[in-house]
Length: 115
Length: 110
Figure (cartoon, each protein chain N blue to C red):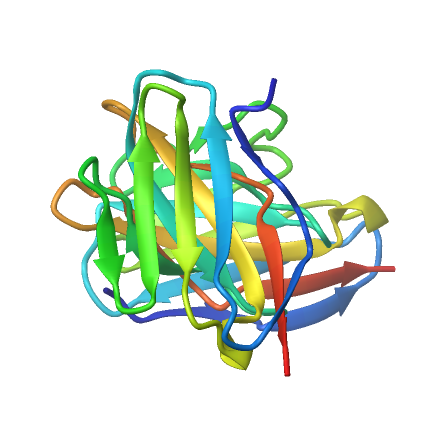
């Protein structure tokens, strides 16, 4: 497994502002993912962030709204831009480990409230 | 039809009971299957992988039925600490992108 930390753990932000969430892993990993989980819902994949390449976004998510950085094999950031109340959610990063990289290990999440 | 479907529950069972959850998937090319556990206000954590031959880990047994395209999780001798949401996760062959079910809520009461 891996030890994954996220900063901040929670934040309350005003609409129209942006928040950058950091994800730090204690080992080098190729594949990192960013998810959103809204109350009572399952996880929705925002994008896959592999070091050395542009992030790949899922349908409904765009780079202008959720820019991602992946400067090295242990770190990534997700920015939620020009926030609205609909962006209130838990944002989680994860890494893919295991012999065939099919096991996901998650950070503790960032709880975002937009007022 | 959703790719991965679970009965959201909640399943409300007494301590010591045996409880089973099913999860159906729509993509017949799916290759990897997992159960995750998510406690309230916490991140999901890998509970167990699901192998074709079925696998057991203590009180937990996971099985895969490819013909009917579902996986199951059986919990024996339920404990209060088993109360959580159990997420079914499926990966298609050649893909590293998992698909999560909405989760099944389990409440174990004294």
